[in-house]
Image 1: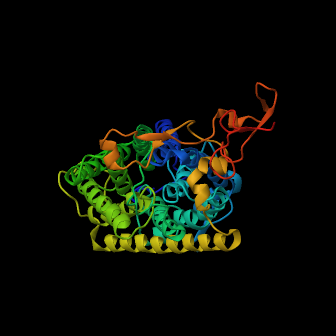
Image 2 (image 1 turned 90 degrees about the horizontal axis):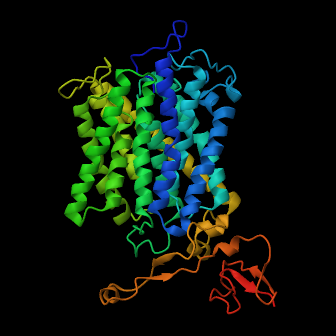
Image 3 (image 1 turned 90 degrees about the vertical axis):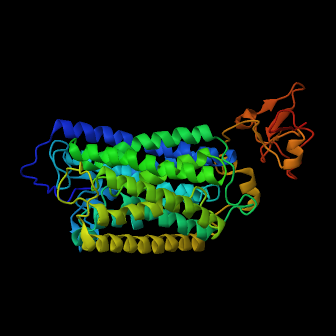
Length: 493
């Protein structure tokens, strides 16, 4: 987060309005990445789980932001205790002035740095929602997210960005390749393995049809824009380092997407899902290096992340049969780790001038070893802690997922009592041969209508009261009811 060549002198620090403005704008951009993530994941999943994933991300953002205010910032950036965790002097943001700098960033108010970091802390655990999507119970999600934030994110953040022991060793992470993407990536892998695959995983080869690609593309575009604040804001100033970071961010995303484009064209057709994933893989991969490498090195990193994520996703689902619903452990985890290693290859640690014409190898073998150690250590720690949290929740709360009958209905209705779409037209099980013969391509899914939301009795034409069916328009045997007057209601007469 802080460039190694930019020591913070609190006594000489003066709040700069230009730097403050840029970090304020970057904070807003990063905040926008949370709803962008919700739109992307919702569009990539099946329609019956749309509100579930959106609710998880919005509610998660709210909870994690409050946690960061109460204790998260202090545990992450407070005075280090043995290089392991921060102190408690900044609980409730005590002693964080709005008109003076802190010891973590020059030329911006200490409170603004805390707010900027809040956005990172809020989105990190929510990346894992793409791994356990369409399965995890709502109550389990809430407890798991809070525990993971405290036990995984806060310590890791302190180790590297809060001047903990990994920072003291010399491990570098410019904007979150290790702290964010590696931790969430390995956490996603562990969760996916722990809870097991969804129904019909093998029938779909792990690739369930997305229900709304325009929504997913909108989310991906907003994530792309937000990433400029994510990486550019990590310069903590509005200077040349911010410019270099933004350029690297864009180039990394584009080069990775090109790899996905041509590989998908060679395999079949240029799938929109592949192009979107390619962009996100490149953005995640360049994140830890965007402030340390020049443009030419960025091209190599972007291409490498594209190949790794493309073939990694195929191997993970095709060979290992891991049902990480949106391939978070590859799109974010593997690429974030790879980008962190590249800091030890191409990292320019001597100057902010990233305009070199050729590849630079200023880091050396020592830095590469440190980056490798940091990635491996955090990977093992995050994996073990995630598994431990899940095991403890399973022992205390029972099954972490709903049974198959409820999952078939969808988490929107089961967990929230709402649906994203009424009278939804969905694909049927019609065979390919029937489709070629001109058969009907879909059927009306029996989801609740708007009437099912009514909190007061509805009366029919004969004055008889009709009450909502608990199953959303179906009788207990699931075959419907001849007495249903309006969808979702049955007559009591």
